[in-house]
Image 1 (cartoon, helix red, strand yellow):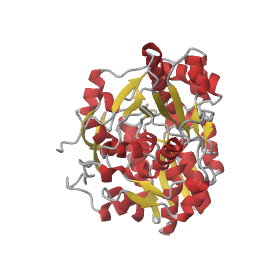
Image 2: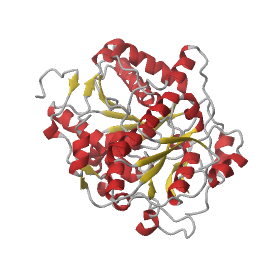
Image 3: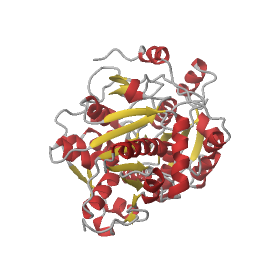
Image 4: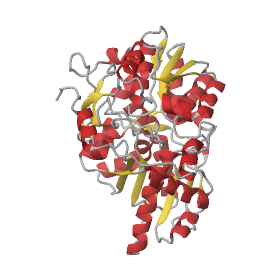
Length: 457
């Protein structure tokens, strides 16, 4: 089919859907550093992680040798309710930009949760139910993960307790109500319902919250409640594993039409969607079978890859989680209150951090007004209102396409459109009213936060 005209949307059949997740760590010569117990400084054991996470998810988290892991039939069946997701040729965007570049995007917003997060939520809920648990706890930032998990828990009849970053809880009430509609309880974080929440409020009384704060509260709630475990929507290796359905579908669709991307772009907060999109392509690069240029795009107000340090740090503000070696701004880093574009986490996935440190992918940061300008341009020609997080990738894709316009190069660009922005109208209103501003943390602010990193390694 290589010479056929590429359709606007490329769909796979159900038979072509992935039957296994791909574990990119198996092809990495230098593996990500192990999680450490903050008390002993030694690698965490399965038993220690099992007090926080579901047993099967612990196995997936610690497995860096199995290249492929079977997707249980129950999860495959659930995936078929909203997958395959379309791979879209952005003909209208190409025309508007006047670029010779060919632009594709993998659209993950065609489910009620509005994002890619459901790919891992249903897997984690499945393993929790299989273990016989009563329920799970979690955090959510913009609300996409909490929405997805509430749907998954409803499907498996599990209790779902969500700690939502306070600023998002206030700015995005409708996403909160979707969670409650699916039966989840939603608490603004930091809260007075946990010991760690009260401690954070005492130290930062005016805080708008952060993912690090919400993680701390959710972990405490899980470990102090019989029959509950904690689940996470990004950062961890198990989550990136589940999200590889994105990249595996994309690669199958592109191979079907003889398409090879030159540049692959994804927004980067904790790393789940970017890691899931690039995984099979990165695997080819690691094995020496093909080469691609990978670009991680993060917000200038929370620039962990581009301005953070590669070191062991706590995954949460309350310092109750294991230590992970990652690019980090420090677990106490608080994004600016005017930060509206999501991707608010202080660190980056251990897998992506190691790949970036090895020079196998690039990273760039962008200001949020430029991000929303790109989102508006995209919405007006492609007919989808993109999530603010996804729009970071859109901004970078437009920039690369305009470079092609200048040079005349006909490069093929692929980016991840992680979801829709219909619950993000507070941020869009601020942009449309000219009230959105950019904030870039100073070197001194970052240095002050990084100075508090644990003294390990």
